[in-house]
Structures are given as structure tokens and as C-alpha cells.
Length: 496
Image (cartoon, rainbow, N blue to C red; front, top):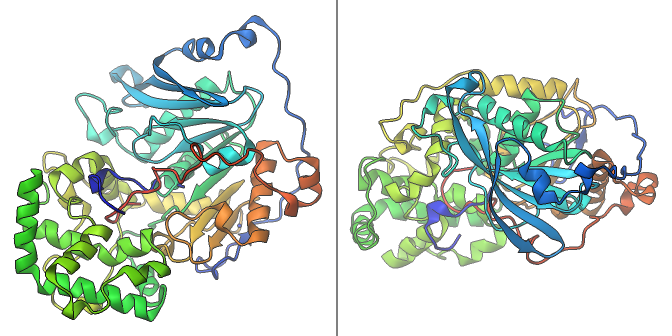
């Protein structure tokens, strides 16, 4: 949560019948018990001329695929690529754009993991957790309209979840001819949402989905689940310290806004999109409690001002800046995330919470996504889109896994495969935040989830098939590749 341009840092990680979404921490709920699949050995690649060609040549032989660069990565080939996509998949003749892809190549005989953050793609090699578990290849896709994967000129009406799912479908269809083994989709937060939407529209593509900390805002105007969450999250002592700092930041609005104006002038920050420095200041302060629980843990409460009322202005500023980030709602902090705020205001929805501890100190409340998107871009909210996805997951999810954190606000409204779903699961990491993952689950659930992922990928060892408690990632931990994915470290603000 600490400093480079806050709006540019990202935390993008990364089910029998799931009755209530509020299952106790650490509890997994299974959809209908699945019939155990036989695990077959991975097929050897045919020895024809195409299969024996260099992998780079095979990838670049895909129509529309071009190489940006190849980077050295121990044990892999790593490619940064562009792929030509239709701006509108319903009308492909109406123009194309270049979508950025990275490909971490292990071997065509291994399974492939399709990773999406829902935001930009990093060009630095890393492995998602499922990639390490199955010891496979990884294809990572930049979400459409995040630069440089943005059509020019940009027709924002073509930024929706179906178009993005269709981007994934075309990439999968093109690369499946090379990577013919099983495929899993994964992503964290907005990436977990993206993996879910892909499965909803193209359910025959993937052999399994592992979605981390994926919010599910079914009814945009009904956010009482978040209010209930903030009444009980963590400890009362921690909640009281957070609310006290937030109150002081609003009580001391005048002197702290003077500091904010100087800070903005020093860094060249402007506030054209949100409208005024006052609106930007309050937006940062209003995010303080949410951002703390999204990215921190109860132990981090020790770092908060012990007594906000007697704290100096600088101490209040430093705490809010470290957790919410004063650059986040400046034009320069918002610009990278315009596609997200556009989607939040047109399809995805966005959370709101009452924050009664603030009394009448707030002038604007939680501001809507419309305030964070330039007025030159039209926006109309499409009701029913998220309800459709939620209904599909509830009744039709097959081989889908959701991992949430007990103390992550985004998990207050979550996906819950239920009656009609098959071989699907929800797990909750005790005390976990927005970086929760399979490794952080209690031991027996971590092993069970790992065994399921191996089974879906067709690489479960015989010993694991016989006893899932023996499941472990097939690839050794790599300090360079397996650090917590930077796409799932989206520090500051209410962005998933």
C-alpha cells in the first residue's frame, strides 16, 4: 500500500450446494458431489513437422499474432505478443485493434492456465497459483480498452463483459491448436469476475475455473451485505481506530485540504474528472476503512494512530495516504482505470456503505463511478446483466472454484454455485484479505482444493487421486515467478 503512483499499483490475484453466501470462515461448500474423473496420462505430442517446429514459430504462425519481444525466464520461454481482435465481435468487419498477450511456455504436453487480471497485463513474467499447482503454461490477456489494448478511436459501447469474453474465446480457440491439453481459467478480483463471465458465455472452452476474491454485485442499489460486514469485521478495537481516523480527516478538512492542494501542485495533479479538489479529498477519505480491510490484516491495526483526536494533522494525513492514497482520484490516478470505472457504471455495479460513524461529516457519500469517468464518455447502467451471470453460476456452474478472504470487503457479496451446479466449490481463508488464495486455506481445504485443480487439469498423480490430502503444487516455489501477483496488489480505492 505504499507509494508509487497509487492509482497505478494493482492487487488484480488472485461448492455441494452453497446455501448461504455467509458461510463461516474457512468453510467450503460443495455443489453436487461430482463423479470422480479418471486421470489419464498427458498425451505425447505428435512428431509431425508442425509439432517439431520452434514454439515461437508455431505461435507466430497463428493468424493475427505478432511478437513484441521474448524475454529470458529460467525453465520457460516467455513471449510478449499482440493479437488482432475485432473491435466488435458481432460485426468483425467494423475494425480491429491490437490486444496484448503474454505467454509463459513450459511445454505443449502440459496443461495451460488462462490468466486475466481484468486490467492491464504485466510484461514481467509471473505464475498464477493454478499455473504453479499444475506446472503448466500460462496465457495472460490484457483486458480490452486498457492501454495499449484500446481501439482508436475508442467506441466505449464496445466495452462490455460479452465482448471481453469473446476476446478470450478467440485467443483460446487460436492457441488450443498448439496447447492441446486441458485449460483452466483463473484470475483474482476483477480477474476472477472476468474468468466467471468467460465461463458464463463460453462454458465449453475451459476444463475448470479458479476465481479468487471475485465480487458479485447482483443488485447494484442493494448493498446491505457490506453494511453488515463492516459491523463485525476484525476486532472492535481496530474498527474504532479506523473510524476515528476517518472522522478526524473530515473534521480537519480545511487544514488537510491545504496540504492536499500543495501536494497536488508539487506533483502536477489535477481534478478535472472528479470536478474539485474537495470531492477528490473526500473520495480518498471515504475509502479509508474499505481500503484497510481490503489490503491489510488485523495485526496492521497496531500501525494506526492510537488516539486520532490527539494525533497531529501530519499523522492523520500519513495514515490516510498510506491506506487510501491521495493520488488515487486525481486525473493522473484515474486515467489508467477509466475502463474499470466505465464498466462499474454500466454493468458491474459498485458498492456503497452507510458509514454511520461519520454522522453528517460527509458531503458527497460514496461517489458513483460516473464521477470518475470523463464526461465526454457516455454511460448508461444496464440492469440485469449481473443478475443473469449470478443465476447462471447458481444453476449451471460446472468445475468452478471460488476462493474468498474472511476479512475482505469484496467477499460480502460473492458468487455461490448452488442447486444445479456440479463439481463446484467455495472456500474462505480465515482472516484473509483481498490476497487470499488456496495456499492460505486451512490445511485440509488447501489440499482438497489443490487436488481438485490437479484433477481438472488432468495431471493429478495417482497418489493424490487415491488420497487428496496428499495434494501439493507440482512446481517448486520460485521467488521470482511466484511472488504475490502485482495484478492482485491494487492498492488504494474501492477497485476490485
